[in-house]
Structures are given as C-alpha cells and as structure tokens.
Image (cartoon, rainbow, N blue to C red; front, side):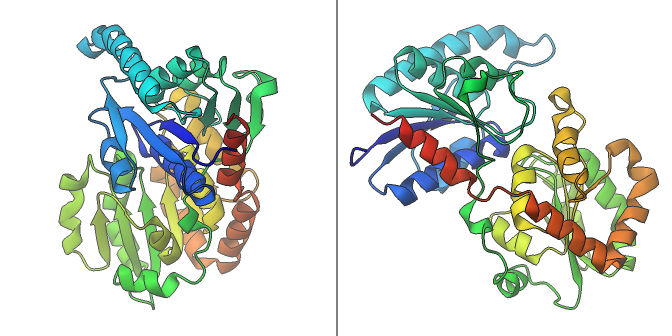
Length: 364
C-alpha cells in the first residue's frame, strides 16, 4: 500500500454514527500514522464538535434528514441534497481520497454516493440489525458492507457483506486496571455499588423519568448513581446534582472510566451501545427505544438477552417490572457474574481492525 493513503469518512447526526467513524479513523492512524483523514458531516450536527475535539478536520454539508411528517425541512430536502452532491464533488476532487467510508446518517449519503459515481471505492459500515435508509441506498455501489449482525442479506447484496462487528473505542478494551482511577475521577464511595445510566448522546425521556421516580428507591438500596441524561434534558434534571450520591451529566467524556466504575448499567440498546457493553462485560439492563425503525433496538437487546447476557425491560413494562428485576440483580452476585460472562462471550473486540483491513484492501 502507498505510504500516505487518503480517506474520507462520513457519518453523523447521532453518537451512534459518529463514534464508529472516529474508532475507524483512530485505527487507520494507529496502523498508518502517515494516512490523511478528512471527515465530512452535516452542518449544525454534533459531529461538527466531536470530530475536531478528537483531532480530525471536518467539512460540513448543508443537509438534514427527512421528517416523517410534512414539514418545511422536507420541502427543502431536494435542494439541500443537490447542494451537498455538488459540494461533495468539489471536496473529493480537491482531497483525492483512495477510499470513502460511510458509517450511516444522512450526512454520509451525498459524499459516499458522489465518490461511487466518480469511481472511488466506497465502504459502508452498518451498525444495526435493521439498516437505515442511507446505507440501503449506498450499498448497491459499495465495494463492501461491514455489518455486526447476521441475516442482513434481505437488505444488502450477499456477496458484499462482511461480518466484522461494530467499531468500539480502543480505550474500552482494557478496563480491569482502571477501577481505582475511575472511583477517584468521579469522586465515588468505594464501599457503595455504582449504577451508571446511559440514555444515548441526546438523552432518553422515558429512562430519565424512570430514574427521577426511582431516586428514593436507589437511595434505600445505598446506590451511587452516574446519570447521563443527555443534552436535551440536562436543564430539566441537573437539579438532582444537589442530592447525595447522584451525579447528573449531559454527556460523559471518559466512557472508559464510567464503565470501569460501574457495577450495574442501565442503557438504551442502540447498536454501538450494545457492542461496547459486550466488550465492557458488566451486568446490563437494556431499556430499548420503541421509537426507531422496525423496533431494531429491541431486536439488538433480544440478541443479547436471549443468550442470558443482559436483562431486557420494555418501556411499557417499567412500572410493573423494574423495581423487582433491579432488586433481584443487585442482591444476586451469581446472577451478575453470569450476565457479565455471557455478554462478554458475544463481544467482537477485533471489529475495528477487521473493518480497517477491509478498507485497506481497496487502496490502489
């Protein structure tokens, strides 16, 4: 392979598309420090902050997703998409990438589609058990589609599918020696069990409502809580920072340390979260979001809970089941160990390396 290959990586809108993209970029740089990487994202979306913070340049396109109802934003979509195609062509001509990689989200649609039409090899990375519109559209012209779940032949050409698993942050691969650092970082009481609550980068209303209601219950159980409520909800819930043993944050920078500190984790079941939690190997209660295409979060969670790797509680069951299931888990060390062992057995820790291996195959 040439000494300084060039890559464009595009994906965004939510953490579920951005973090896999960053994990891929970091692995490319780890293997080829001279590689040049340019990100392309959507203006005004979180990738415009997260990507530069991780040390990579990014160019924003004027693009946004299609809403499910009739809105002005939908009426503007054709104009935005054409504008993004033109800008993508200019970016590609100037940067001259060897391979263009899309990790999903509407931002990746224009640049990956344009690259394929210009004869540049494209790779699609699909995190979910049910692909989004963008990746389904891009798959036809892609050289390879890296997936984390089985049975995706109904969406993608079978001969292009490569099962790699989802990319995860490198700092999650070794947590066992970080517990003391984590307890110090979050100022935790070493005598108490720690509950970590994750609602995704933007937050999860139903999980936040549950935690708010259950604070007296957790207090009675002598739990300490790190509660990531999401950027949408921080103003509403930050008042609970004044309570003892409760830390409310919009966002967690050091995910490695929060996972190292956790004794029990409550989480949504987005694809990246499920992949990371399998590697982390802590007892998990999944509360999937019901508001996603084809209910894929429930399917993601079921793929783990069916193998006794996690507990799964649907939103409509929280009132009747949460307290009992949480109490059982907290009081039963054998159950916690069993869940940890089983979820870890499902992890694909080499996913990022496998994806990058596939990408390098297409560098001329």
